[in-house]
Image (cartoon, rainbow, N blue to C red; front, side, top):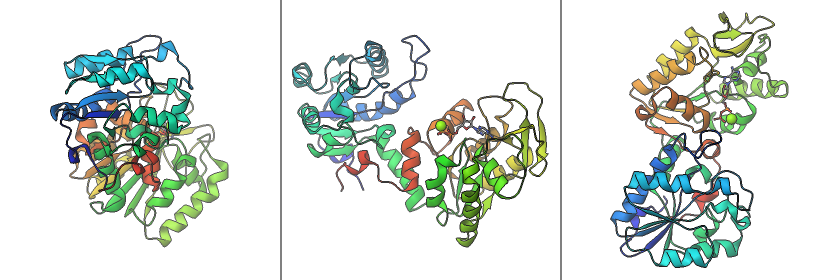
Length: 394
Ligand code: ADP
Ligand code: MG
């Protein structure tokens, strides 16, 4: 168990809070196109302010690679946060230095200050101990609410935690509770639904889930290599030739571990990935040579949907088809609807699975949609995330 912000007396204290405000912008503008990452951190900030803490926030934005990039300054982010809090948010173009120190020291309880993009300083990604110490000097305690960056050992995600009482924010706590729940004490039966582009991204998570999950369902582009390993012709579908043997072995290991793996029985195919192209539904043994598998078929989708709605919990990583291009979003929609409607604990990996679920308007009906793509995958692989490991145990 990790210490959380509810286990600390914040009265009159200063908190240094690592958030993940790495938000997307409308191309070439300073307009934030999706502010969910900012909104997700508000409960933590409000909790701290409500308990009498002054709040110093720190985030990265983009990849400035250790130098100041004016287009990656945080003006629009500060403005949006201030709107959401209904309170002013101070902003210093500094993180480790005197300007930040002076501004942080001047904060009254409940006031909020944002440091500049932490990746403007090379000490951040290098996890430089002096840089971490200079961050720690800004506050009495450290809070990590940036789950999406927790798989990186940087100064603001890992190093700083060694200098101060270090605890999880409310968003971080929720991530650990739900993702940890999948690995430690899932409501059973536990089903794992894996899709997305490639098998190569899912090798380790497959390894972790076989023998742990009660059932495994495969869809998306990665299904093609599994089907090939079963002896089916897959036409022009995405194939990872070098992983055909791995897929065959995975099926054998799963059988030996009594974890049934279900592959698609029918698929949607087309010759090109474009909206409105002619598509057909074929059995997995009948994929034409010039066609690509771009979605699970309706029989498969209905079967997965029915079975997933009836389990105790589902962990889902990877869309069932090329959901960005209709009609190849149908399979993803059908299973997502069923999971959202069923009486199941639903844990949705971040990245494109979270995107797909949000795009379908179903995010609020899932038990948990992770804010971390790479981080949620590494967590489910069973890796210890440095940003989580560095927090105090209780
Ligand atoms: P994440 O972004 O979470 O890491 P992945 O990169 O593994 O997820 O998978 C997401 C991508 O997989 C989506 O962009 C989707 O279009 C693609 N995809 C899903 N099914 C197929 C398919 N049958 N063929 C090719 N690409 C697919
Ligand atoms: Mg990806």
